[in-house]
Image 1: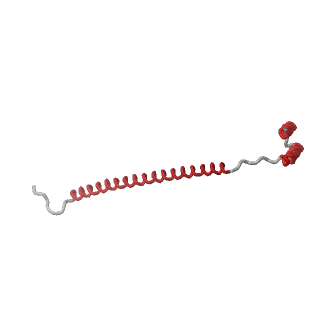
Image 2: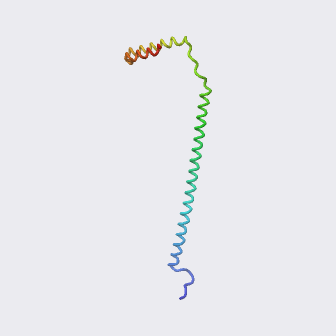
Image 3: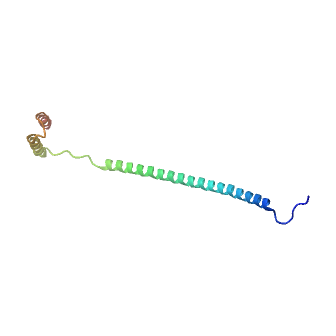
Length: 117
């Protein structure tokens, strides 16, 4: 039997189309997978860089707070002359709170004893 010469028949054309379509699908799937992997790696790298940047900022903020606390002088004690009027003001305030009924007798006595001690 002699083979046919010239253009392929209908079945040959369908087979060739199927092979080309299958190859194109496989290649496009591989390309899409490769692109997805690259995008995932880029996102992970960006997240890592952001995490490192945040850690550096946190460390700098902690160091700034430590430096500010070390540079601040301790509060100076109040002069003794100013303590007497302040004590009188606090006792007056306690008396007003007691008169208004905000403080009970026991609470008033305890707060007064604490101020006077």
